[in-house]
Image 1 (spheres, each protein chain N blue to C red):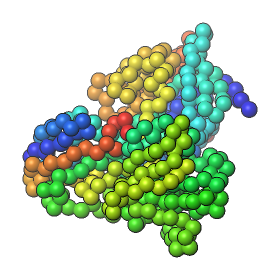
Image 2 (cartoon, chains in turn cyan, green):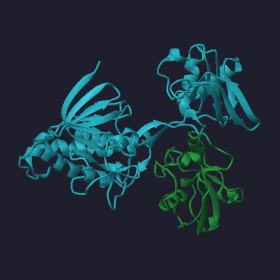
Image 3 (tube, rainbow over the protein chains, first blue to last red):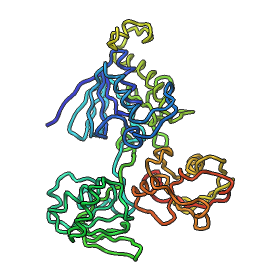
Image 4 (cartoon, rainbow over the protein chains, first blue to last red):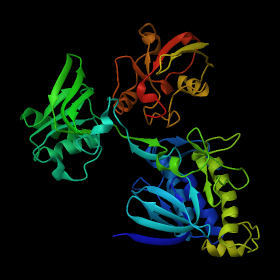
Length: 341
Length: 107
């Protein structure tokens, strides 16, 4: 069922800079909705390096990606932003009154006065293996996720990878497929040991084939594969297959942003350094995804950008309203908003 | 020190490296086709390269964590390394490597 949401600001991307934008906007009484392709907040901090220490956040000699995310969530809690995860903004349309209509791939429509793109390196999408012409088979017989288990029933399935996704789907699909081959480049797995042991039992029982190697080529026609060719230490190998599931993790791609008519500079969005507004008035870009002379891709730069963006967004959302600049240390008004006064 | 990098298109570049820099940082700084999306946190494999055989001993073997990350690319060879895990030093002056397809910006 399609959903319609009307708001002041839609922030695309719930990474650290987007999250902090909710704080700066909240101080100015602006409510926002987040849309993120991941299933949780934190962006790169949560997806790429949750446990890695970060040393260059002002005031934190050391903080991990996850801790920073948790702290930002606590900081913006008083403003109760709403989160819409696991979806992507497909299109942005500027309406006659200057506001925007956004469509997501989850069949939602957002009507908003301001759009803030805080999408970092773009949207996280499955990594495509280096196989010629794999595109023609995608979503027909090559899948990067299992959406419908029934698509795999009775099929000759090849799963590639050595992580939890590869192992979990080997175990889950094995009972319903015709044949299942797990392909990995080495005999070591970065997955839950229990899953690895279970997979080895299935291999010992002859229910799963395990093949050392890397995928090199696909045969098939009209989107339907029939053979997967592997390179192995013992030479090339061809396996009959009707379904392929490569699990190489995620990588960031600019995605639909490239088609929104914004001025770009080498996969980043050009903004001014007063408002961090893009070439389309009302659409702002902050954090790693923007570009201006001297840009440094640092989280702290994104925080600064969020603060200035919020001032400019306020002028669009509440035209003519006088905004008095205040500090959270001294303003009881701001402290009330934060729930501390 | 200098490093010689062959990019995905086969073009050879001689780059000036600075002691203590990661090889990935040198390659990125010179604007070659390297995605290096995690910035050197050993959390992706988009700075994947192949070290020339004559330099393999000097560079040394990848760590366990690096091997784990190499699982996320489909074009691993016996001389695969993540260039963010190789530190520039005088001992590596003249290092030769080739950027993997999986390190491309459009990967």
